[in-house]
Structures are given as C-alpha cells and as structure tokens.
Length: 343
Image (tube, rainbow, N blue to C red; front, top):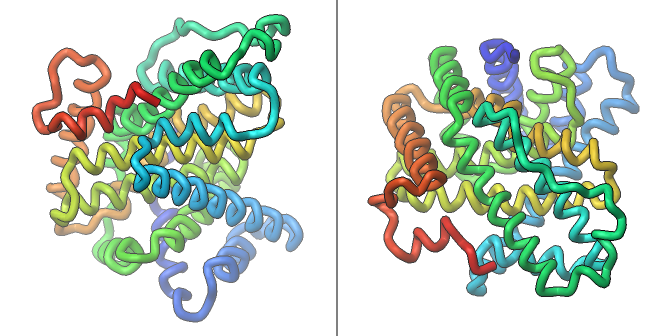
C-alpha cells in the first residue's frame, strides 16, 4: 500500500519548489537541481540519467499528443489515428499483431486489477506459427489494432471510475494546506509541461523514498503526463470552460496518445516489461497516484465542486462500460466520440 499522505506532501513540495524557481531556471535545469538536492544517495551521473529519462519521456508524450490532435483536427478519431500510426511503422504485420496482443493482455490485466477480478482471458502469444506475416493481412491487423485502440481509450475512463482513484482524491483533499492556490492558478493556466516536470520529479523522490512501489522513471513521467492532462480537463469543468462530456473525451483520448507513447517506447521490450509498464500506468498504481495528485492540487475554494465532478465522471464512466443505461448528457456526436468503433 502507498502512503498517500506522504506522497501528497512530496508532490506539493516538488510543485512548490518548481514554482519558486520558475523565473530563474528552465524546467530541465530545475529538474536536475531538484533531483540532486533530494536524491542524495544518487551520483551526479545517475541524477543526469534520471533527469534525461524523465525529459525524454515527457517529450515523447507531448509529440504523440500533438500528432493525435492534428489527426483529430483533420477529421480522424483518436482511435483511428492510433491504428494508422502503428500501421505506418516498419516491420511485418505478424510482428505488429503479436506486439498488439502483448499490450492488449497488459491492458486486460490492468482492468482486472482495478475491478478486483482474478480470472481474465489472455491471448496466447507463444505459438510462433500464429504470428507469421502470411496470417496477418492489413485488414485483419487493422481490426485487431482497432480493438486495442478502443481498450486503450477506455483505460482513462476506467481510472476515473475506479474506487481507488476516488479514495486517493479524497486523501489529497484531506491533506490540503492553506497555500493550495499557488500551483493550480500559476502552473495550470499555460504551463502544463512545467507541472508535468515537477510532478515527475516528486514521483521520482517518492519512489526513491519507498513511498510508492519501485518502477522505472519513464513510467513515473508517463503517469505525470496523463495525470496533468486529466486534472486540467477537470479544472476546466470546474471553471466552466469545458463540459463534463468534453472532459471525459479528453481523458479518453489522452489515454490513447499515452498508449501510443508506450508502444513507441517499448518497440523491442520483452513481454514482462510491457506487462509491468502498462500495469503501472493504467492499473492500480497509476490510479492511486493520479487520484492523490488530483486532490492535492485542487484549490480550497473549488474542492466541493471537484468532488461532485469526480463522482459524476465516475458514474458516467461506469454507465458507459456496462451500457445498462445511456449517458443522458451525451449528444449523438459526442457519444460516438467516446465509443468509437470505426477506427
């Protein structure tokens, strides 16, 4: 179990320190300085390596987000973009299909973890004959990637619907101190990348301190990226700049672009590494960290509305997955955006 209160304290210290040095240091300069001051057991070379891994990951995630947004502006859905992005990669169709199956298995396990389900259906990737190129024409591969893209998009919604996310958000709110406004108004309005750097640094310190389970620093940076994107969407809802429906679409699409970044990062990764990485970002660990950050960064004056928005978003996501009832606030176009089957 994570120590949420200690995690929140570290996160807020990192964000506050970043803000104090906002005018005197670039994000990369601050990151190396902050990690050097707080990871005292690490050598200078190790600090540089950690800083480089964080910045490289955040840069990759920003590039994927920009590419997805450009495709959406041209009329594609996020899911369609992901399929076409993977189809354009070098390599045979069988190789891509097997990699897609590995990622899909990881997503399924993450979903089961969040929903406390033990038995899950896993695709067998061991039989080499099944993954030969001649068994995977473009149509079959695209159909498989469409399903992976859809599951990737739903990962973000599952996180918002998870009980552990809501609990961690409440813990974040409970740990509020009076100077809360300093991060949300200064950093959220136009400096999201800087906040992602700050949160990545805080998570690195928390991991080094044993507050959160061990993982790689690129995983922590990926969680920071995804969390800031969802947090900014909910902030816009609270400020009246975005509807809850639009926020959920943004969160879903962010999960898609984040997944694309993980796919690119793990082009030659072994299966266990893919499972661990996807599980950390989209499973229980990612949901707890994201929830804690959401609560920790919320302004005092917006807390009650934040709780309402989180609860409504969670309920909407659950209704969407179960499809027991239609989401009443989704018009036809936006419903299609959320449940995109035509990738």
